[in-house]
Image 1: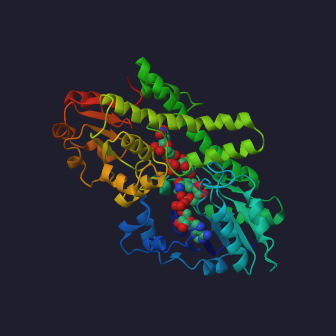
Image 2: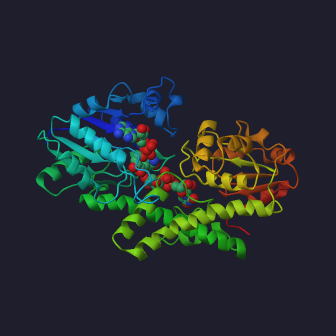
Image 3: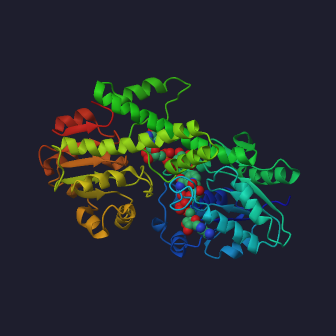
Length: 465
Ligand code: NAD
Ligand code: UDX
């Protein structure tokens, strides 16, 4: 197999952008072109001012500064990039279906299929096609089917190479990946393709961390990894509810169980519930696949992870309402944070959206401050729910850029994203500005209980009585 010198990635999103930036940065001998049909997004990737990149990720702009224009390019010319590349990554979105069979659970593969058809149309030479998007098991087979019927005799090798980066730590996760998974056929051509992709990662990762499997194991491993991680969050969140009834403390429990080397300390932080574009979508997809094979118990088991997460979000909103004397109508409640976790501007499936929505149902006046999320995004998230009209959303919820000023005459503040800056605020000043009694609802457990109570707050921390 020829050495790879030209790569194309279809989809310039949260995965395609950072992943390809790191590959380009670590492989100066490879020209990497990231393409997208969204012209605005490509324009943002090409912005001269690196503070205006379409996604916020610590360390990303430094990498872009080093590589963009040298061997890293962002373009809307999809066909040209496909034509020139020896290896094509598909990194488009695979959201939950919102229509037809599998609505609300199955992954919508229309964008992936469009990519496959486009590759089939354009390719004049043999190519390796890499599934980077998270896909249901056996999707590679479907892609191969489309590609093998192009009629122009081109040979395609399909690989599955799911991405394990987490947002907010994407660059570090890519540079120091625990493992890279490459699934492909065990034929000589399949093995050669797997090795060609492995060669790319070996430019910066030790070979032992690059795992080769068959294509279906690779596809399914990605769904399973996310299901296991989300299950940990739902497990600890379920116990946080019990702690609030019993004087046990969730932090002490996380620490106590995390010391068991079989359990480990990571991913045991109780919260307002997990968000993000992956966990819910991938578990729903797993549930759908299990159910479609008649595995009811398997499907029900994993579905419970989502049910528990919905419960946690609802429970937090209900706690706010109960604490504020069972009515929040006309009361000002400030949300600190809107992103689904710190260090990202991504809001997909963020718990904040559902908490705001529940409080707005009770006619609360919501004020939102988030250091990286735009006003436009926040309103788009609410409008998407279709709970009320866009006008009503804009009347009931305001977005502000000054977190201190936001607290003036507020009845309560809910911390829903764990941004570091929230810890260093002048909470005494905030207390003075708020109406009394002043309530803080810490859904991320980032503030100091003793300090907050000393200041005078009515302070609630998730997972503590
Ligand atoms: P995203 O929505 O941020 O980006 C996808 C991009 O693909 C969009 O810019 C869209 O315009 C583009 N696109 C769609 N169809 C296209 C087409 N036919 N031609 C060209 N461009 C097209 O999505 P994302 O968060 O980057 O996720 C991509 C995939 O990676 C998903 O399958 C997701 O499950 C998976 N994944 C995401 C993460 C994450 O943290 N976001 C982590 C691991 C895996
Ligand atoms: C996740 C996976 O971690 C990553 O491997 C995969 O590639 C994509 O999906 P991401 O969704 O970006 O990454 O972030 P992650 O750090 O996993 O957090 C997901 C959600 O769980 C966030 O809302 C986070 O706040 C929440 N969480 C995480 C907790 O509530 N408690 C924890 O202990 C950990």
